[in-house]
Length: 191
Image (tube, rainbow, N blue to C red; front, side, top):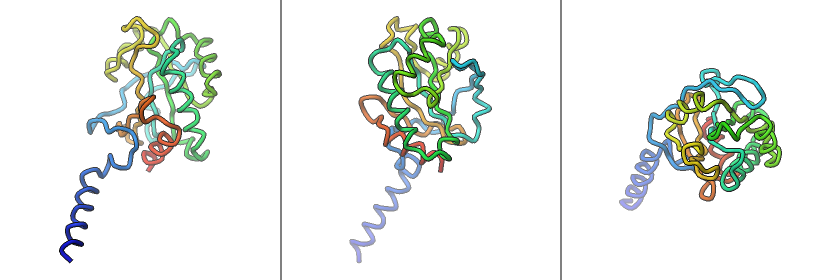
C-alpha cells in the first residue's frame, strides 16, 4: 500500500511539473513568450500580419534561400511534417519562414528554394527589406545571415506557437526536428 501511494505521488508530481511542456517533443521555451508582432510580405506578394493569425497554431522559422546546410533540411522536414496532418488540422496552422537575408531572398530565389524542398504551398516565406525584417529579428532574438555575413550561419529554430500566440515548443534541425515530432507538437498545440 505504501509503495502504491509513493508511486501515485511521483506520477502526480511528474504530471504537474511538466503539465504543459511534457506533451511536446521539442524543447520548452521560457513561459509567457509570445509570437512577435509583424506585418511582412510573402514571396507570393500577399501581406501577412501576425494579428490576423490569432486562433491558429503558428509554426515559425528563419531561413535563407542561399543556405546549403540547415535551411534545406528545415524546409523539407516542415513540409513533410505538415503532410502528416489531416487537412482540417492543416487549415488551422500557419507555417511561416522569415528571411534572414533580404538581398538573397528574392521572390524567384525563394520560389526555387521551396520548390526544390517540396515545400512550396506548404511553408510561406516572408521577405522584405532589412528595415522591414530587423525589428522581427530583434523581437525574436535571432541572428540573421546578414549580420553573420554567411548564408549558412544564422538562427534557424522551428518555433511553435499555440492558438493564443504563446511559444510552446522549439525544434532544431539535426536534433529533434523530424516530420513526426513536428506533426506531434502541432497537434498538441492545436489542443
